[in-house]
Image (cartoon, rainbow over all chains, first blue to last red; front, side, top):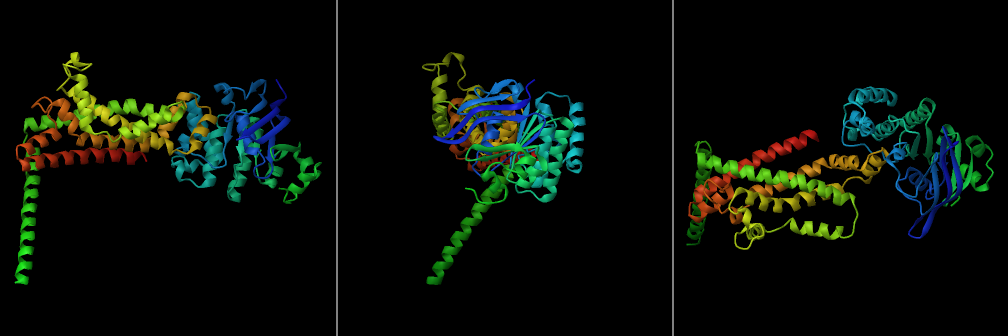
Length: 244
Length: 251
C-alpha cells in the first residue's frame, strides 16, 4: 500500500483560460490531518474539489492510494472512499436522524445497523436531543455538526473539509474540531482541511500547506511551518501581513 | 328632478343586486339538493370526471416527473429547445389538443383510427395527458432548478449512484413537485374543450362535469349549469384541500 493518501503530479486547473491551480508535485500523508491555508483565491477549494473528483483537472495526474484518478469519472467504489463537507452546511429536508442515516442507506445497510450507528453518531455530535428535529430548522453550527456527522458515520478513508467552521461561534468551532480529532484518532481517517483560520490549522493539523496564487509556497509539518517558516511570504502571511 | 334620477339609478342597481343574489343563492341551494339527491346520473358524471382526471394525472406524473429530472440532470444538445417547447406547451389551448387527438383517432384519417377510441373515456384521458404533461414537466423542472447546487454535490460526495442521486433530488424537490401535480390537477378538472371534442359528451358514457355544464348552458338552463359548476368547485376544493394537507403535513 502506498504511503501517501493522495499524490499529485503536474496538476493544473484553468477557468476561462486563467490558471487557478498549478501544482508540480505533492503528497498527502495517510492518517494525518493536513491543513491548507492561504488567502482567498489561492486555489485551496479548487484543490479539494479536484481531489474529491467533483471537478476534473485541466492537466496532470492525481493518485488516490494506488488508483490514478482525475482523467475519467471516479468509480463508485473510489467515490465512496472519501467525503467532502462544504463551507455552507447542507442538510437535506428531513430529520437529523434521516440526514445522518443518508450515507448508510446509500450503501444498502439494514435498518438495525443504521439505527445503531446513527444513535452512536448522535452521541458523538451532541445532537441526541435533536434526533427527530427537521434539520433545516437547526442553527448553522448544529447543521454543520450534522453535515460532519453524516460524513463520518460511513467511516471514509479521507475527509475533505472546505472551511467547515467559517462563520460559526467559538463553541461550535470547538465541538467540530473535537469531532475532527475524534475521527482521526478513532477511525484513522486522513483529513484535509481548508481553512482561513491559522490558529485552527495550528491547533488541529499535523502538516500544513501554504498556497498562494494557485501554487504551493510551502508544505511542512505544522510545527515547522508556524515556528520557522522557510519562505518569506509564508512568514508574512502567518504574521498577519497583507501579502496580496 | 335630479334627486329622483339618482334614486331611480340606486333602486335599479339595488334591484339588480337582489335578483342576482337570489339567482346565485338558488343555484347554490340547487347544487346541494342535486348533490344529496342520490341521482345516479349525477354521481356517474362526478365519478367519470374524477376517474378521467385522476388517470390522466397519474400517467402525466409517472411520465413527466422522471423526464423532468432527466432533463435537469443530463446536459445534451437540443435540451434548451426541448425546455422551450415544454414552456410553450404549458399553455396549450385545450381545443387545439382536442382537435389533434380527434384527428389522430378519427376513423377516416387518423393514424390510430382502427383502435376505435374516439368518443370513449380513453380518448379523453389521452387528450388530458397531453394537456397535463407539459405542466407537470415544466413545473417539476422549475422546482429542480431552484434546488441548492450543494444538494447535488453533497449527494455525489456522499457516494450516491446515478439512480440514488436521481431519487435524492426528487425527494428534495418534493414540495415543488407536489405543487406541479396540484396545478395540473386543477387544469384537468376545469378543462372542457378537449374532452368535449374527443369525448363527445355522450350521456352515461363520456359526459363529465364541464361538458354537462356546457350542455345545460346551451339549453338555457343556467341555474342547473351554475349548480353543476358549484359542485365542480366543491369537488376541486375538497381534493385540493386534501392534496395541500398531504403536502403540508410532510413539510
